[in-house]
Image (cartoon, rainbow, N blue to C red; front, side):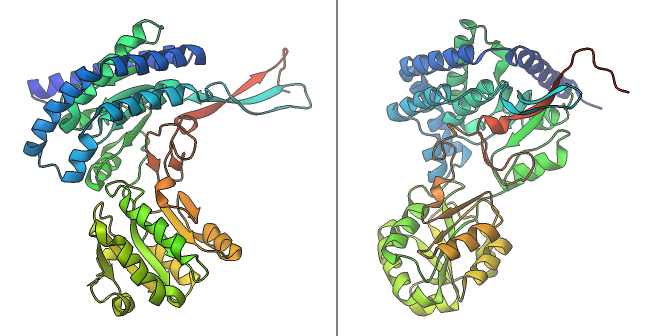
Length: 424
């Protein structure tokens, strides 16, 4: 039996979900032009409210030490004038994308004259749980509403003030354009039990998207009564083939590992063909030296890099999210493929090679959401792939895989047109 406090929390969660459901019924009928005007107005107001957002972010940063955030987590939390400008530009980029709602996926006419169409429609209500990145609040709200969905935002407590400032600005913009204000709601409690209550509300919530640590995602999967779109971790690989351009490979590996370490598409594990390991690994180690990357290698790697640390079995499946890289020397592309499919997280994996047949074999046999040839794993990102902002990167196979943009937040229905047809 729930206590009075628990009853109040449960009641609050139900009210939020019901309001979101009501908003979703309005959203699915709004034109793309209305949603785009709301996005552009929100972008303008966010820019105009830069000082207000920075003040809210300052409070979050002051509280960060008490929450025990790492340096990488504080970096994700921190806003600046440039980052706020990027948030606004992200909204404008989403406004410029085609509206997926109502898109005709396919159609046909049956011999009896019935016209069969398959059209894209919103999912309905999204419950989004995410980490301490205030920009994600804007991105998620924008991509949800543009695709015709209402969204319930459950951000990390670390970014509560920043997220609230951004969401309130976007809600105020709703009023001017007929967008229901409850289309975007930020959960106003940091009580972790609220998540459990929302996960029971499948009659109002259509999809939950958890974006955070593995323990959170496993909890959501265990408790959710509605479908879950997820990825557990990002153990991303690059395989340097015997036919790779080594100078190019050094640049790509450095970018994939060092450009931003605390993200899910950063490089965590490197495989190098035995035929180029002697030359390539010292080149790479020298390039990575300024970034102070700890290299953990197998026995053969240690013969080429005496300063490296011996890798353990756990290292092959580890998502470090920091300055550590595991390295293994392999004898063939098939050995590399077997290693990745065994230890990888099916997120993003890449091959460096000038051999087209090797590239084709790799992309065919690697079972990951994104497989990349001769480029950094950091390109598995909604913006980089032309989707606009993303709400997450899915390693699931149903119903969406990879960066989840506008189309990935829709489903479809069949619409049938007849002229008094009856079935005989």
